Image: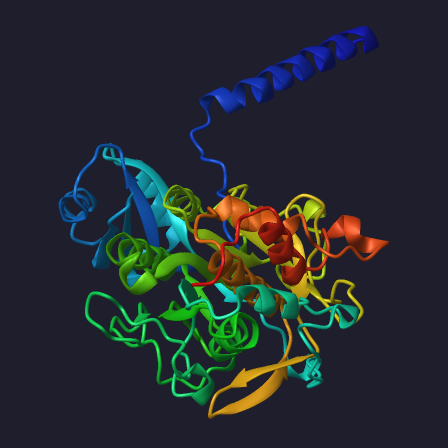
Length: 444
């Protein structure tokens, strides 16, 4: 018969043995930690970073050989300014989690990133009241643009704003004379990166037409030219359009190439990109961050919405991109309602948001030559992109950081919530102060 003391000794020895076994387990385990993925992404495509510099074609050939015939790559592309290679594969080849693990085991692969899907940042039309309000009326929460138009006078339209969105209704009469004509081939209908052709028009989509209508006809009033670039599509009967990271990067590649070849021709200044989409992801979409940095070096300002999640971005466990990027050439804009306070759906942040602009209670362009009321932080960022175009029309020597600073430091503050979002853009004050400081020369 075992004594009580012997039982206690045996129990203690078993406890120690179990503890030792548990402590040793992580050292011998070969299981990989579960990858944290974006909220929305394409399960049969990815971005792959080669370990050594190579062409996209050569890298894809090597992947086909290494992965075997059962892994069917259906589409691939490289990017002029990025080392990443995009690949898409058949459903039968597996989903992203399994395929990425196999890819990262290849000696030639440094990293694999998902093809994130960015959602357009408009909200339901039912939430939008069609109540036109004067963008020049600061009391209503507008941009107070009238002083800017007075300072600019008869200056020629020079800034080119790339509007990365869906299928535009470019036949809307309000766009007449406002579309940028490409210096390389003379066409003025942008580019479609989803269908792969040189025409972003012909659509009846509300979001892109409204965004372009705010930037060009409503705010810039002829001082800017619009470059429509289609990057989004409706997927699986979705109510909202999504832009894949693949198409966003392709559009940036196109715009930066256009800037290199066309800047200065007929006075064109391709220096502003509006990207009215967002994605929630634990990890930063790394290729897009690299593209933002390249855009900064080439003097391009990127304007993006804070998002429509009705939260404080500083408190989120999963960041919202592109708002969470730290790039100095990124202007993040939240939505302001009548009266100057943040809209009920608009994200705020003490750190990430630079300024606010109208996101509801206004009328903008709609397909078929119409107008309508809409709501969403992508419309707020559209107002800010138009304001940035006016700043550049004032003085083309201003770099993207200077344009962003000019708008952010002159915001109209609306206590007590101003600490959460900076304040409402006051482009009239921004341009008036720039002119007083000697930045804006006399109109030609």
